[in-house]
Image (cartoon, rainbow, N blue to C red; front, side, top):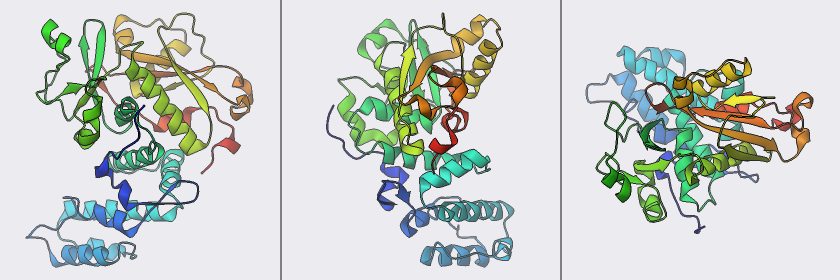
Length: 337
């Protein structure tokens, strides 16, 4: 494993402070970065109320904003953007760390735009993986906050960032392309030992593909990210291992890592046979065990748990990291803020 270097600069982690426990602390600079988003940057035709609101928050991004001030903005879409932003800012500064703010969103099912929550997940993962020199783990961690399109080729399954893939369907690669490690998008490289070094300089482009075939490095790396996620947010230690098949698996507890994973898990739990379509959508099954069995609630203590990762019928995988927080049978004392 190489020494860790910087990555994901676009999430703004360098604008954040850290407390003595390593958790992220909101700074004025981090809040001001939101004001540079195109949804909030006043265009030339913006009304005076919008321009003034933007200006005062650039000077003091924590300044209390009355609802009447936002209501004075002329454009309805812009008003809605600012209402969302002020609510988001108020939520972030209400908690002692970004990690605590995220846990509250998950546990209370607070409604914020998906794009903002994904940005929060990315910043937290950037913190949790700060010392990580394994680019396979970093690429796998992208799945926590960026949807993936899965490309099927014979016995292989490859994840491509959905935004980096301009296609509307799955590809069938030629044998030569497979041999050379080339994928359909011109700038797309498959992450491998030979391409790993380039990840550091292009990490914010999200343009490297990851092999998620059973038994290969990508699925193992994703399991390792799950371990880091739970350790960082919940202070629990687990072992996560990808399994090759469903046979002889008896569910005592399961968590879907995606909506389709939950649906497939429900079917197995209820004793239903999976049809060929559902089996084709299942990307991986993981076994999770607690290092300390006392971390789990009593009725599943000592039993392995299972995590199901599945794509939808269109070949898109939207991993839901919040399910790991809300779905695991963890003793209340372990679910720390």
